[in-house]
Length: 230
Image (cartoon, rainbow, N blue to C red):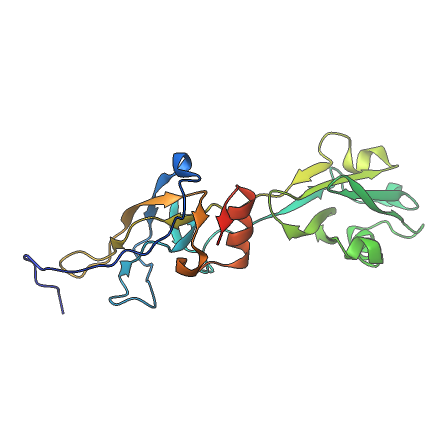
């Protein structure tokens, strides 16, 4: 049933989100997708302050942090610059993660396809503890197991043409997580879902008990920016 327009008195009790002014200068506006719902609120289309949201690059708008359509932290990766061929056989691939060498894998004389190189890397226990190798066409893609802006990978080989010296480094990225600082209605008076403009915090000293949809990854990203949770 559509909502009846007119003067309606609604009493809202704002949630205490911030415990100090930490990060206020980094606040920024965001647009919430119209399909967002605040599942534990009544009505669910009233999106409360304290909701943790994440950017959805495909739309440029923000969704709940636990929405599977939202962006996620990405792994650091390096893709070989040439196809795997017979030149790769018996070469050694060295992998560093965050500046530390984790392994040097010696390929067998028969490892001359992308699938064989990827299998050889993944069979190395030290490599598998930090990274994963997969086939990408006739090339090999090597990525860290964990994503985030704190991840860095460097891959070298004694076959100089395999990974080169300039494209052999990769960096992870953080998804853009934020905390909403005001309530916003995501329906208009005709009961039609609408996007909502809202002020958000990128950094803060937060009252964690009043945050909604705070995922583990969101907490890590917000902490990495300098946020504090009490």
